[in-house]
Image (cartoon, rainbow, N blue to C red):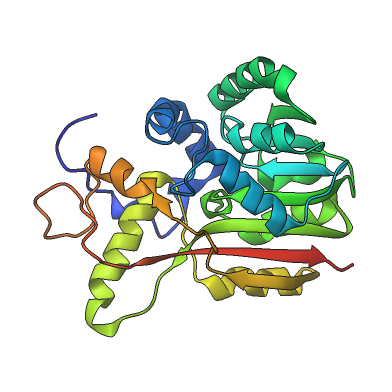
Length: 274
């Protein structure tokens, strides 16, 4: 990786070729080690003080109870899934598009096995095809932790989630969404969002788009809010700065957080109604 500023090829953005499942798999084949260096086993830009605190918060948000079967969609190297199984007597299935992440997750599961109250299994697969990977109505809850934003077709993903969720099963999403529209900053916001999408194989969408998809695919919203963390640790700032991510077209120095808001962190929980 060059030390020069990274400027994305914004021509990749309109047709979505930068975040197909194949592109995301290639991205994580190259970047997984860098993510481990920057985030540990939890590939979460927005975290709490400790992984245990984060997963206790998410477990409460899902309404976790002993004996449930969960799907971690876009599970990375398994950090969140392992922590849930460590704290709670639950069965967690994880799926990731990246073969290297599967290998690392399986190693971590083997190392943690004696500490787990529940169980964890991670496999390679595409969360756009969950119905082919898992049985119908086989999960009590499905969760995405900063993962759905990688999807080029979130409606397909939500339809697949509905197949594998039990009736009245829960879908939890913690993710990035487009930030506020500020007319005087409109050009800069569009540029920054396009840079983010192209560099990190994402498609950051308006919040209302995902809510509409959930509504028309048989989900009832339980809550939609900014995460209620007592303390927020945004590791994404340090990560993007370290790798010389360029936020603005006129920027001639490595990226810094200067109060330029173009993304929102939000979480939601919805229930499959039919």
